[in-house]
Image 1 (cartoon, rainbow, N blue to C red):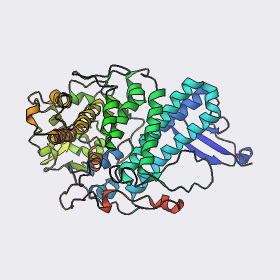
Image 2 (image 1 turned 120 degrees about the horizontal axis):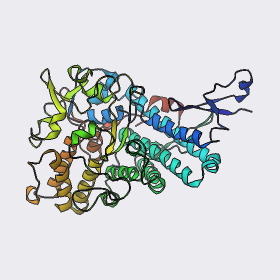
Image 3 (image 1 turned 135 degrees about the horizontal axis):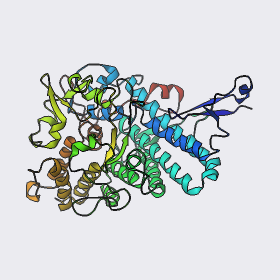
Image 4 (image 1 turned 180 degrees about the vertical axis):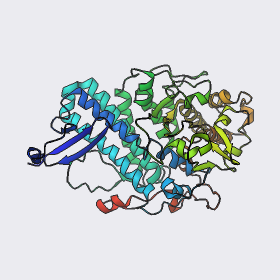
Length: 485
């Protein structure tokens, strides 16, 4: 009888599947290989599988760096210096139009790899794991797996599907796989709608919120492992992408106090750091809600690291793949020279570079996924757009972000002619605050703005084919029910 083997390589945190258990008699199973019949036999083995999902989502092709980079270079703030397709030149100039290009294939395959790890884990917990660890611990672990699955599906929607506003979620999304693939079977599956995928993302995050611990065992684990506020924070991002602004307000209010100084009063006590530059030196502050950790023995991988992309050789030994466009946000008069965030921009050989990621080769800066600062600006924007007013709390939230870096600027209601002007100021603040953190591309698409013109590159209107990526050629080859964009 054909059986599958679940490989759990604990040191690297990888999970793979194989088959033919009959062969183990003549080909003994290595000591680091665990049968799928025993993979859920102990709490340690189950915990190891949860860690493997984290290890996979922090792969450089996902939230370990490249997903953030792709979304930043799709905006108008970075200039490509190397014309290297391997490091995103096609993404920068809006030409990943071939479904077999590296950028298109690699993110798709990595996202679905993480999704499948989560699905296999959830299936195993249902059949055996829960009985081993008990319902409470099982739900904690399942909540982590479902949150990571939600993050993976969210990333796919941002690149491979039309934004939610186009057809109110009715346009084709991506195949919605919720059962683990552990062997040869027919896995052909049509694309679910954008709305259906978002609904699953929210279902996963709601489950996570209800079942994750309020806080983890340490500041490090509160940054690199999910807890309740992680799920809430991510929901504010998801609802903002859907333009469901009232829902953003509801979620954000769970972890943002009504008045300054803004702070989460339950769960992990998230709050802004007094100095924003500290967030990128001490990675486990209460501002960092979720980050992908790296160390000298566990690196992002060659030509993938944030510091390698954005830092020039003279700064940190990086390759300076992307400088800052002189016509981008770095040129904004709203971003004053005395603003502390300017300390994370430096000029080398006549060009400005982002120096937010300062660790020298092998570039082991933690990759930020979501910070408390984003939750504050998500709430500020959502309140303005949902009420259609120059909202007082929104101004206070905007001032909290601006004020910690630029005490000379204090926004007042009289500074904004109407709600649209305030919303524009909040979006502009996001460009400054999250430069190099992977939010600009998704901000453009959720707002229906064109991908901006750059030197030698024409703007891409929101209605154009190039606004989203094609579906991976590998998926199209193996899944005949999946159609291309």
